[in-house]
Length: 212
Image (cartoon, rainbow, N blue to C red):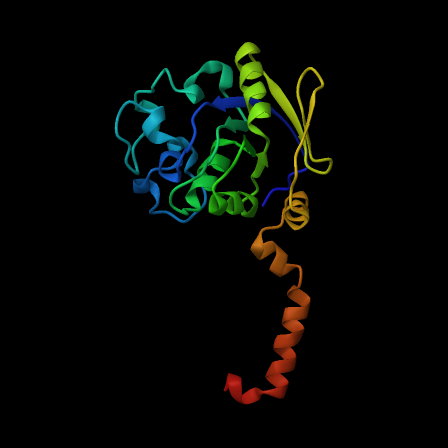
């Protein structure tokens, strides 16, 4: 998992509440568990004018010109601003995989569904909770200023606007540590690889019948 320290990223606004995981990545794309390749199908039903299926050539599909991610000014966005209860619905981990594969490293919203919120941290995405008034401010500023960027500093727990306004956010200490060091559950376990190997050697000697 890539480390998250400071992100200076273009912001894209998704002005919808209760965005569920089936909207983020529709169910027909859940057949793979490779964690990659889901970006072209992020928000598939909103992004394209036809029905998407696995294996389709997305480059030849008709785009919905009204959908925010298809607008030229938001190409290359790394920060998504959304409304309340983002990531509700089923618990599919493919949802943060799709966001990450598209290029998003942070999502800002007034609230998130619990399982989606947890899955973001496990996959290198920083979900930032700001109050509704602060999110309203971001939507207004993003709409008024093409190329709007935020500087997100995880260590300082701040998001700074182009005019220097600073939003502060809370983040669990352990989750912050994992993101700063690029550690998912497997990475955390591998920190103790030497101790695990030593235990396996010791147990083979003390309880050889288990291994016979």
